[in-house]
Length: 223
Length: 205
Image (cartoon, rainbow over all chains, first blue to last red; front, side):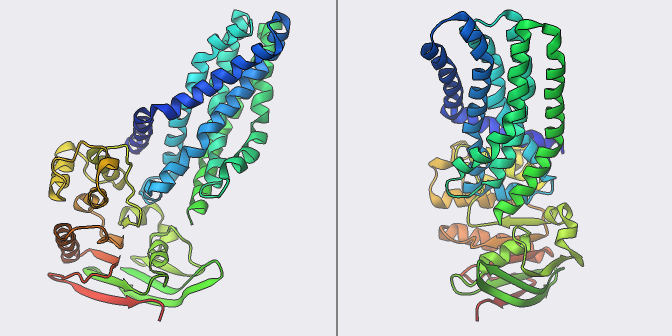
């Protein structure tokens, strides 16, 4: 069972390596969106410190959204998705492998880029640390919830826009607590604990529910 | 082995077929025939469990395929209109992945031997998007060589293949039937069998 999980994960990472531009576009999109704000609102340290957490999180949501559309669509078009549906392995596991690959390619790099972005907004070192922790807990939730939307809108015309309309509202809790944690870190570091705990709770519950929901949605979409 | 009872399928408002009944046992080739648009692909996809029939059920070894779920899919190999291979991966990578997913042997020697047998020697290491239509199809069909599934469902497997590949595919199908397997296929080509029996099912009359 683990072997199949690994081979699907490996396949998706290998495909991404063969098409590096797709991955890089998402990351540059994130970097550019985040960098535009200081240019637009000026370099006032106090203003940037207030804006920073929110801007970084909104950019992360949008960047994660960009690659979601292709999560199942590419496999749907060349017929590999129906082959995945017809294996004797639980579809939930294969979906989880694809989501993991999506997170490794779009979520994890954002976590690693966070210090660079934090500096643009004059965030303090502890705040940057909290931002990395919050992104580490929050970005997998984005990939997990996003997969449900990607599976539901598979094969629809104008699926991209519909996907955003379906999924962005569901991202709100992650945005609120993710950005909230970073804002609080500037004031009182220990007060961020409940926020991170809540993000962890989101992660655990979506880890259990989202692959099940995506798998069910895929079976419907392929009909 | 494979039994269909009172099967009815619609696409949108259009009734494709209804009241379809048949049963096929081991060592049989079931040739589904019909005009374009008569529902051949829909029937095949319903047999796989990719579509849900509007009415009726498909049974495998006496049990409903819905209830069997993964146990049914282990016995099944489906080859559809889409090749199901990744253009950015090489033949070896594609075949190894397909074999792993099917639960077949996927070590390097087996995979290379299968590709050589299907006539892709020398093309194993090239991304499949660089290959011709027929070669892509061959890459996808190499799964049949490795497959141990007793039930093959093949949708138009002969299109885009040259005569050599057609001969080989006919041989593979005949071997599968001779070995007690079951093959359901749509094609406009006759498939000579060495042993076992061939049945015909005509849709859309």
